[in-house]
Structure formats: C-alpha cells, structure tokens
Amino acid sequence: MNIKKSIKKIIEIFLIVTLCVIVTKFFIGKEQEKNRKNVTASFSQKNDKEKHSSEDYKEIRKRENKKNRKKNKKEIEYSPDTSISGRNIGNSTEVGEQSISSGNKKYKIDYDHIIGGDINSSGEKVTGGHTLLRGDVRIIKKIGNPASNGVYKASVEIRRPDGKWQKKTSNGGVNTMFPENWDEKRVIDEINSAWENKKELRGRDSNMWQGISKSGVLIRGYKKPRITAYPIYEGDR
Image: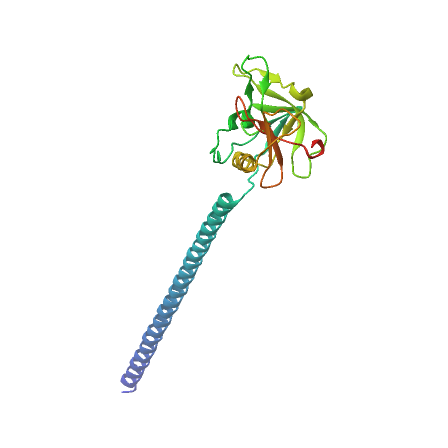
C-alpha cells in the first residue's frame, strides 16, 4: 500500500515538474520572439532613417547644384566687362580665350582691321591690330604703364595671311591698344559710341575723325578709304 502511494507521489511530482518545464519553455520562447521582433524593427527603422538621410542629402545637393548653375549663368549673361585673358609666351602675349560676342557692327567701320589687324594694299606693311582678341596680334614689348582708362601702348607683331609674323612699324613702331579687359562686344560698342558723336580733327589731316566713347576713351581714326579707329593714350592727346 505504501509502495503504491510512493509511486503515485513520484508520478505527481514528475507531472508537475514536466508541466513547469513546458510552461517555462513557452514563456521563454515568447520572450525570445518578442526580442527578435524588436531587433528587426529597430534595424528596419535604422535602415529607413539612413535611407531617408541619404535621399535628403541627395535632394539638398541637387537643389544647391541647380542654384549654382543659375547663378553662374546669370553672371555670364549680365557681366558687362567679361575679360579676355592673355597668355604670355616669352616676350609676346597671345589671346587665351575667344570673344563671347561679336557686338553690333552697325556702321561701315572696318572692325576687323581694328580688332585683328591686316596688311595694306601693297602687301608690304601690317596695319590695325589694336586688340589681342583674335590671336593674330601679339605683343613684343609693352611701353610704359596703362592709362587710368586701361588704354596702353606696345610694340606688336601682326600675323600675315601666309602665317608669318611681321612687326608693325607705323607711328614709330608704337601701337595703342584698347583695354585688355574689354571683349569684342565692348570694343565695338565703345567705337560705335565715339563715332556717333564724332568731330573732324582740326589742324590735322581732314580725313581724320575723333570722338569720345561712352566710357570716356578718346578714339581717333580715318574716314577714307575705309573707316578705322584706334584709342588715344591719355598722355598723348
């Protein structure tokens, strides 16, 4: 009788222990599942945050780049004195960039002769060439300092049609040059404004004219056989 009671007691204890183990495993499993979900959710939130941060950064950079492009475009369009940079090669200076605009060639002025230079009808002497804008005029030596308005004097060579460089010898080899920071449009506009208020040059060749440009530069030239123009250095008036 006592043996039966003992066996029954053992079975009851075994069942209780087994039940406790099962219940414990159940709750442990639920807790582990909860932790896994929390970790997954946290990782997902982190990825989303990083993704959004990356997208926000890209969007900000995109807006900044667009803003900078508009700003640069505006500066190019509205800069009145876009300079044409020169490149020094030994004792000469050659143009580094092309003129942005050809300007309004509204008068029968030989703008090409003035800006780029050419040769006379006999083919012996080079003439014109009062800027470095087209690459066919180069400086041998600058003479003195630029005037307050930017006009300067120099000894120059002009490229002939055959490609050879020839020194300009008229006026004792001294050539007056339009300011280096003027582009082609500016040169043409200044010449036009001087021509519009031109006067005959008294006491000199009746074939000459002169006028003051809109920025105050005195410009002089010939009327025949073609209309020419060149700047006057302030000290030479």
